[in-house]
Amino acid sequence: MSSLIASEVARRRTFAIISHPDAGKTTLTEKLLLFAGAIQIAGSVKARKASRHASSDWMEIEKQRGISVASSVMQMEYRDCVINLLDTPGHQDFSEDTYRVLTAVDAALMVIDAANGVEPQTIRLLQVCRARNTPIITFINKLDREVQEPLNLLSEIEAHLGMDAVPFSWPVGMGRSFGGVFDIRRDRMRVFRAGQERRSDDDDLIEGRNNPEIAQRFGDAFAKANDEIELIEAAAPEFDHAAFLAGKQTPVFFGSAINNFGVQEVLDALVDLAPPPGPREAVQRLVQPDEPKFSGVVFKVQANMDPAHRDRVAFVRVSSGEFNRGMRLKVSRTGKEIRPNNVVSFLSQRRELVEQAYAGDVIGIPNHGVLHLGDVLTEGENLQFTGLPFFAPELFQAVEVKDPLRTKQLRTGLTQLGEEGAIQVFRPIAAGGALLLGAVGQLQFEVVAHRLKTEYGVEARMMSSRYSLARWITAGDAKTLQKFIDSNAANIAYDVVEAPAFLASSQAQLRVVQELYPDITFHTMREHG
Ligand code: G4P
Image (cartoon, rainbow, N blue to C red):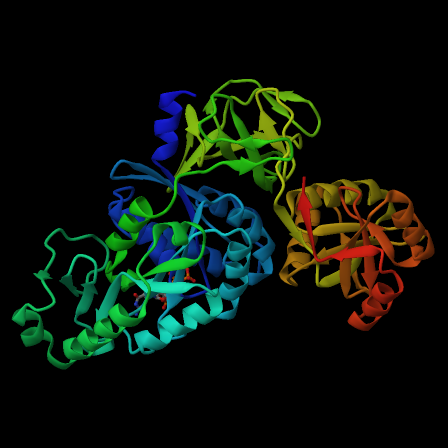
């Protein structure tokens, strides 16, 4: 074990922000970059978001993808730490992509709009974090508005997360009477000051909850906050770092991202509380992050960054060892060797060439289809990591090519888009069956049709399908599975990795089949690997 690798790993923090659209993810991202010194003036991330929105008809998709890649991983240094922030697509139609990004982080920052509380999109993402026991830090945003009672918000979070919420700070007033936030652990109040683009260095701090100055300046708002803090101190559990790391407690911070308020505390919490990269379970063995040999997993593929060159960027989360530019790497799935030279890292706006990377870092490897989602790269060892989730689609469309002479291009395009995870492609057994596209969100079909046209020159015709749900199927032995497949051939299709799935037109139909075949397991999720 190299001590250099161990110390580099120890200072890595890799996390994603999860939130419902409009809770303030973009604003907070930007403010984190600002406080870490990665940008000087807030506004750039926001501007990118605006340009994304401006072309909301999704017909400017190439441009948008250029944009989203540049901002999809942000690395910043803060105190002695290297912080990697992985962006997740905001639109719920792309939530599958988000789930996969969550497999590449060691912690999540949940942003909640204090007026709306825990919203549906956040709940789905939370389930993924919960399933993986990802530690979650909570930031309750927009305290400068008239919002819900903080105590109510806490109980809502506890109910949805199924874990204890431990407030680290507590708001004094809200909206027009918002006076600031009381830091419970340091026993001091930070007084709110509306500030926007830049960070200011002259903090207004009042030491001690018993300090008469607080009561004088903030009157009723402080009296209420004081009562609430006493209540919490009596009722809420003590913060327990091990419980947080196990995903059983979440520390809670209050603030207003747009006003730079509470951002510093969140950044400090990431450094002080969030874990460095830990060991990762491979099928063969447990892989330690500070092992000398490199390994990493492709958790995201972005194809056709430059349509003229058919290039793709594979996003690799480093799991162990040290990455050096130009080193030879083996793709576990195929045994092929690659020697990536122009590997890029992502630093706020710029794409930079990577010289070295360690566990927790994300590197982007441009390639021409050699790397698929879920692929593992090593220095030679054969490793497979599990856990990259594919969710059973909830929407289906059959796809056909308008010009039969372009059938081959359609297949190529769909295979590549399927490998990228943009859509799921199913090949029904039934003879003459058109390919089926499965999606979690409607928008995915539009994006795929558009990309088939612009990137592969294929006019695709999308048609409604009689199927409305799919379940991947497995059985205790191959014979039982094959028997089931043979007897239900009309409803069986294979996905891009040749995993068989049962397609049903209704829940009722699925239930009947499940009862008829107790030896078959029907899965709503397929893990790559
Ligand atoms: P998202 O990425 O989660 O979708 O949210 P985003 O940061 O874009 O924020 C959504 C809206 O909430 C934005 O307003 C943003 O300015 C506002 N916002 C973020 N943090 C705070 C806060 O602490 N207090 C208040 N009052 N508002 C906040 P918008 O009108 O949609 O955009 P803009 O015109 O302000 O850019």
